[in-house]
Image 1 (cartoon, rainbow, N blue to C red):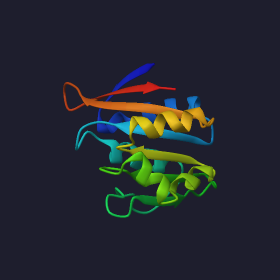
Image 2 (spheres, rainbow, N blue to C red):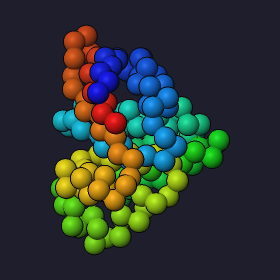
Image 3 (cartoon, one colour):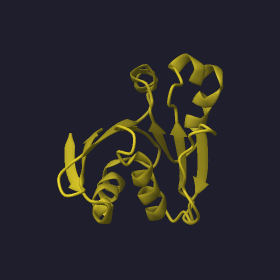
Length: 141
């Protein structure tokens, strides 16, 4: 596990670590309370991948897809109140076959365990408020 403390202006520390650590195809579970900074981190990752335009939380659409200038894709999911079985029934599981990083907010432990059991690269980032308007990012991969 890697721990990084970063303010909004220092999010590049987290993004740089992820770029060095994660493979080009990975599923990243984002955990944290409401307003912890899950979407903000996804926005910083999108910017680093050359994605232009607004990156927003897919709260109502469940998924947003972005293509970076350098061909790196980013997928952003918000699974709040969506159970593992519902996710599978909606056919969203197949989306993880697409090349790129898949950022999953509010993903269940059951979904994470299933994805790991079938061989996906799954990382976990837990975000908690820290001192001086910073956040603690605990990254497990």
